[in-house]
Image 1 (tube, rainbow, N blue to C red):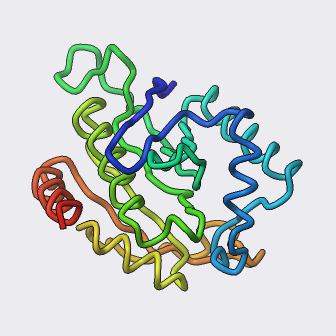
Image 2: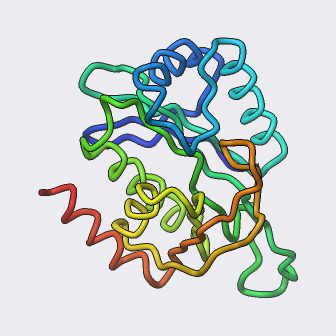
Image 3: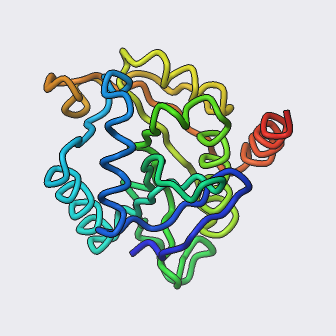
Length: 207
């Protein structure tokens, strides 16, 4: 199971999502419905409650930890993001890679969306900086993957701007937001690349 944590920066606070965040998430999702063409985005309160409940089920299963993204300036829910697809490799317990604390070996950062008012504000960059730092520096993961619909050029550009490396296209990888079978563009950052990526993100945030 992924240990819960609240990640705090200067622009955003990432809190483990709960049903208490549902109303704020609904308000954020309704700012500009057209902005979420490639996201499976609940917009009604019942759909959002089910969405949050599903992430909590994933947390109990050990492969997901979802966050509500909170704008620090006005303490407002502006989106959601998550760690997902966590893998725990079967290291022999006499090998150096063995993790007695059951932290993940690899995982994905994804399912991220922000209210229209929070886009292009630096919040997404800082949220990714916080999540990547925790993954590499606290959990010591070997790889963080970032996937997006191959057609979502805005998301692909944002991922590339983080410093992630394009690995290729996974065909027929999952259900798309438009209820078609989507191809996914996969990117990744591995552990030895993190210091350079961290410096790059810090420079972007400083600007």
